Length: 148
Image (cartoon, rainbow, N blue to C red):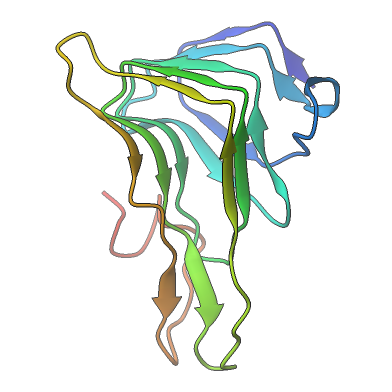
């Protein structure tokens, strides 16, 4: 459990329940200075992040894994980032012809522009399909076409 901290580096976080503030194990933190992204999320099922303040990052909160992810962002304040929320995980596996739908939920989130008025709140939330035979990499942050 991580509460009431000032974090000045990137955070790699596995999603957790966010239905109410009391159940979120990572909450009431102030996060900044993460470079490419302040918070790198890895989620499964109905999990995500909530109840934090994030500012001055390339991406405030990013979901970029190569496995199917349903994510949630709730009760957050995102300030002065180039991109507030990025959601770009994998879709259903093409080899199995799986038609399972991914679901991404954002609720009670306040996204503020940078001081000069620039920045994007939410960038085209979508899932990308996996082509047949693609060998999955662990995540888009460290491998694959979207890595640096």
